[in-house]
Length: 483
Image (cartoon, rainbow, N blue to C red; front, side, top):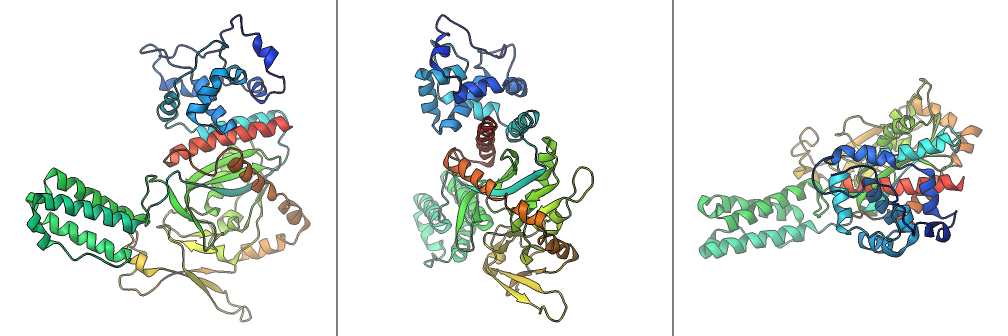
């Protein structure tokens, strides 16, 4: 039951706050700057208003999460510190003698109350509106980039997991029928993942051929587990507790397992929009979404500043709210002339690796250029993929032709739109605006190194969005205070 938004219940000890907490204390300043009633309003329909035990204030629970991010501490530690730290109690709108919550309540609050809530855009929108109201944001440019966060769970070797689960299945079978050993397929002794998958499929087939054996609960359970593992391995080539995380590429030779947060930021270093995706997604396709979110939050955008990942054709054609073409301060790369694809089943360009990524998330293994500049015809870059992966890919239909020895993707280099962009790159305006791009790299560093955004706190993309929402809310507030 939730009766009303809770406020400090003043006691004879409440005057201690004025004696102990300085006027310039960060937590005092946040309380004075923001009316957190919008959190109460957003979460009101997630509580029963007239039944059940009296619930803790949603505003207070949200503030606990803010404290976790500001000071980079655990659920247990933020609750323990709020027991004796007077600045924490003041921020949480508690009387000095009040007791604290149980740490497990924070986990429940995240899962039950914040679930299905677009907290990311709500909190960014709130801070952007504060910055606009106070005249902090004066520029009409946004700087865009993506930062990666590692999954809380490391990916396991799919080969090892398949072998472990096929072993468990065999053991379950032998306990029921030791003579079934004679019917088992020959094991795969190589480190070839494709051969291991084929072995597992044959193992499933032979066990399922004995309907009596395969329906025994102990066998059926292990059989279903192996089936699921084979399907996951074929689709993602990685196994992990974090089912939403994916392998992304920082360079052609290095990768990470986790998520990407695509950011837009004003020249005054206020983050105006964010989109969280799995790690394999390209940067360029998210630009239209970042632009729209920034505009929805009140930003007037005439110029977008980014790296070469954002100079695709679709992005160069973006227009502002008045229908005027937006200036894209992003250096051209001939490899991305295909630009943004509206359909999710198209290829994305990974500017860090300098290669295209197929719809299944696999990076091209090499590229070759065809044609000559001198003959006046368009040159073409052709990207080649690992055909062995294509053979078993769940998305191979209409993408890979059975029996083909290669799988490639070609892009044309020249276009009128890019010729126009080449001329723009030589202007003084372009060069001056390009000088602001370093600011977003510093912001990414602050999120990771100061607020722990380099690694996910929990499993799943929804929890990553929640973590991003609170971290960005905090860095935006700190930036507002600097003005």
